[in-house]
Image 1 (cartoon, rainbow, N blue to C red):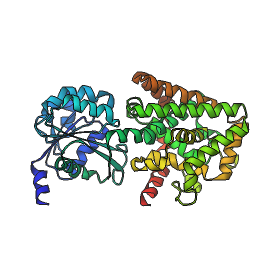
Image 2: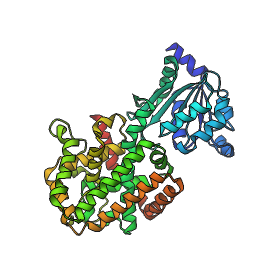
Image 3: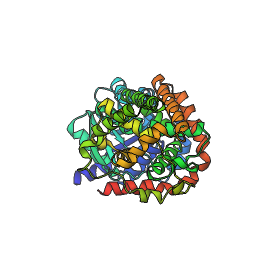
Image 4: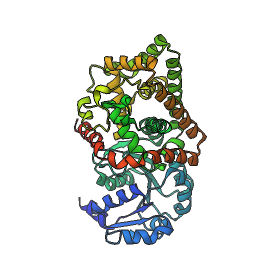
Length: 436
């Protein structure tokens, strides 16, 4: 403990990039008692952050050179698409023997930038908090990657970031990108496609009878939650992760394949495909695994829907059927990825599991998918939206991604404040999951 206290007095910590996550890390590190914390954002933001953090016990620097040359542990907190440029600029100024980390959501370009631009005598440790800046970090997964670092240096990084009170998961950067492609990128594109489909139809889902009930509540809440955030949070995850591109393309293909069977009313083939995929993903756990999701009754208490539940119409749940088909086609077991679970992925897996473990509900969804004309227009727009998002990611155009995202976000923005209270259900579910 004595050596730890000495480190807190003498070891200098630096953060380059003061977005929402950068500020979260900086505040938590200072609150944990580290005395010398150097921070910076872009040089033109110097005066702004100097004023903002003047009473926070941090040394606000003009740029990354000032942070890099004096700090013993440095965290780059910048968007994945900018990491190479920023490290190229400030990396050569890194202090001899320092530990350098990055908290981008995609690790391959980050590691590539570190290897290319950092001096050989610098230790490389990477990290990624698998939650957003508004989520309590306690108990959430924190991925730590010992890429080019001694055991001693890696332990220093672990001690510093213990202030997040997170569950540490040790992975390689390739393992990280492969797992987060499923737990984050594909999950996001499903909700993005829902939002785009609703926007295209000029339809608020809580005003229609196909979106009533517990599962629908989660879909609507989380789609709105995503669209109320910043587009670049999701763009980097999807576009810069090669594993994400593969999985997103397969998800869109699964939507397409199932939709073609639906409109042709090929019941035998459609049902066989859905059941085979469900058996692969959920079969072995159907009796032994405790369900992820809480009761449908609880979720109903926080519904946005203005439609009475007795007026509910069946939903095909194409988005969920396609997810299971995607997992099956790629040989992915989502339960193995719970090591890097996010609140969103827990809920997404939970509602998918809930559907497939309820035989009556699954049969209703299959019948609706094949024969219900009330939901057909929604499914057609979802099919088109998923194709559009997959194409956007495959091309890798950030500007196109931003435009698609912001066009849909603008449609829903007047409803975000109304939605905040009902999002308590998502927080409640996550809390209950963490207690298990």
